[in-house]
Amino acid sequence: MAEPFLVIDGVTKRFGGVLASDAITLSVPKGELHAIIGPNGAGKTTLIGQLTGEITPNAGSIRFAGRDITTLPTYERSMLGLARSFQITSLFQDFTALDNVALAVQAHAGHSFHFWRNARDEDELRAPARAALERVGLSHRADTVVASMSHGEHRQLEIAMALATRPQMLLLDEPMAGMGPEESARMVQTLLELKKQYTILLIEHDMEAVFALADRISVLVYGRVIATGLPDDIRANAEVRQAYLGEQEAVTVNG
Image (cartoon, rainbow, N blue to C red; front, side, top):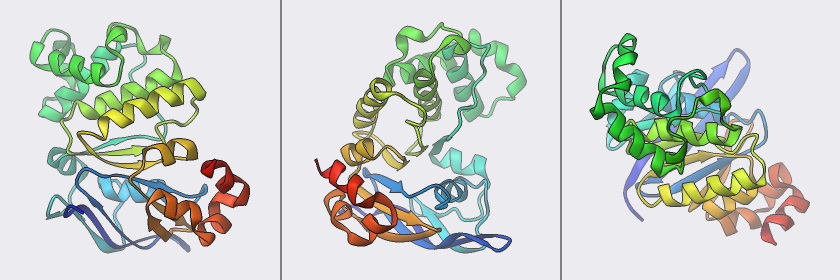
């Protein structure tokens, strides 16, 4: 196994009396797609927030690409190559898909946001934006206004925006949330291609997608990692079945 690319060591976060992250420890080798699953309220999005710097842990450390990033601000983590997609999309609805991705390129390059109009004319912004759209299967929708695109296309677009920042690692927070079967299937194919190039930490409720994509899976319950292992190990883990998957769902994913 490759050396760990992301190392989370004893990360703990409290919100008042709620222990959202309970000494979480796990590592993700370079090139791995590592999925984190767990019921609602398990602390998955809180963990992602700590990885991106939006939430400061009360204890523990986070290392990325050999560097301690525990106290680094969000923009510095982005510059190091950590890119996040969000559980709820945040897009400029009146702009085209290409405009949105060009703005992501521009922001990562450090330009002031009020220069967004120039992003429509500058090839150094739009060329990588078009490349990112192609990676997620949206090149044919480049000039489409976001408001007229489907929910699934919004999720694809958000990943394109993450890719536009030239990341080393993608943090994907429920990219298939709200999708129908066909849209989910397209997203799985997109992620299968992306995992060939990027290290990915994936949070997802769609168990069929998780077991199709993940190299390893960690199960988070009440802020605590109760199991980490290969997909087959997680399927067979009695504690996981009891705490999250349920016997019936475990049988389903085995089938």
